[in-house]
Image (cartoon, rainbow, N blue to C red):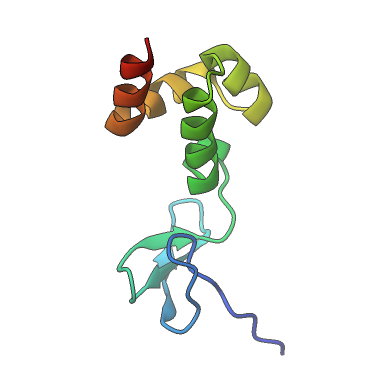
Amino acid sequence: MVLEAVACKHCGKTQHVKRYGTTRAGTQRYRCFDCGRTFVQTYTHKARDPLVKERITQMVLNGAGIRDTARVLGVNRNTVSAQFKKNRAARAVVKSSM
């Protein structure tokens, strides 16, 4: 049996990551005791992935439209719009550049 080290999706550390139950769908959840956040290794919905959320913010800040961002990342445009509304820093930068 080969044990694979699971790295935290948020802080990247592997030392204090423990199994932390399962999701409703039965996917294994993990908890990082360094940053205190929970995560799963592979997300069933792209919109839940923190990397996709970060890319949405970056693309909008770089001037990409909502529909273009949704098409490139393979998520719904409502997801892009909701993520943009949640991120106050991104809105402030876009407003100041107008």
